[in-house]
Image (cartoon, helix red, strand yellow):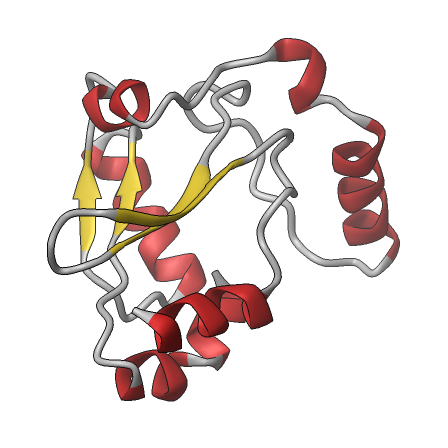
Amino acid sequence: MAQVVAHQAEIEAAQANVVTVSFGTPYWSQVWLQETGSPFPFLIDPDRTAYQAYGLESSVLRSWSPANLWYYTKAVLQKRETFGKRGNPHQLGGDFIIDPQGIVRLAHPSREPTDRPPIGQILRVLREV
C-alpha cells in the first residue's frame, strides 16, 4: 500500500481511483486503516464475494513461502512492528485495474502475500486506459 500511496499524485493524474477491498472484520479493517494511513476508499467483503469473483485463492503453503518468511524476518531484524495474525492469514490478495467500461486491464492475483505488481507497471496501464 505504501508504494501506491507514494504515487497517489500520478494515479490521480491518470484520473484513476484506488479502492481497497478487505475480507476482515470492521474492527481489524479500522486498525489496518489507522496503521497504513491509506487515503483510499475501503470496502469490507466479509463473504469474500469479490475475492471469489476475481479468482483469488487461499493457500497455507504459499502464505508461508520463502519470500513471505524473508519479509517478516527483515521486519523483525529492522525492528519494524509486525501486527500479527488478523483474520485468515492464508487468503491471498491481488491487484486489478478496471477501466470505466468495466474491462479488466490488469489482473495480478498474488502468488504469495508479498507478491504485488511493480508500481511502474500499474502506472503504465493507467496511462494507457
